Length: 226
Ligand SMILES: [Cu+2]
Image (tube, rainbow, N blue to C red; front, top):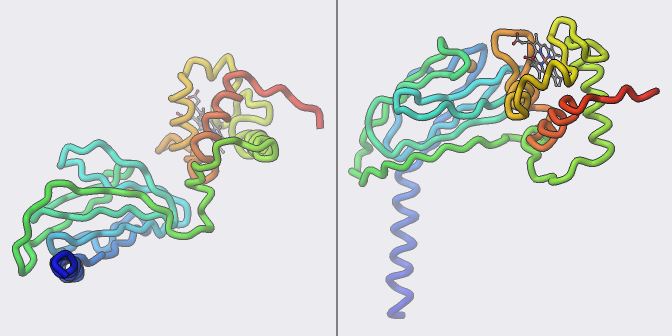
């Protein structure tokens, strides 16, 4: 009894404070707008920004807090963050500076110790987009490699030329592409080049696959007979 009673009390206190404090507020991102763009929440609450676009990526960047630009997130993905301090927190979208919003965090009825730590995570909302964050697969199967090469020829090829010698987009043959580092090639494929027709391919390849693809481009794709 001596041990159990305080423990039980501790658990109950925890339940009481967590149910009291935490609310999750939703902000949708659609047509290049945060809605609502202004929101008032209590200290301890969480905001979940959900990307409801068809294919456009965005980010939620608290630039004025001096933070680095966070990862972009894609349709059906969301970005979550909780606020443990009162204050006004303006933010914007990294790639689209005109998209802005502000979070007004007010002290809840009961004073809480302010915890300076805010955590941010990106999660995928439904499993149909699991391919986006399919980072667990450590090896790329032969079948997947063939799929990627097929996509390279047909999708990338529609802009960069079937033989990758250039078209609307620049040549991707080893001669041309090796002026870039592997990291730069990976970044270009992952995020595209905002403001140009080069789209982001993050929804289609995981990190390993993008790296592999970049390495194939650097080596040169031997033209397989069909
Ligand atoms: Cu945006």
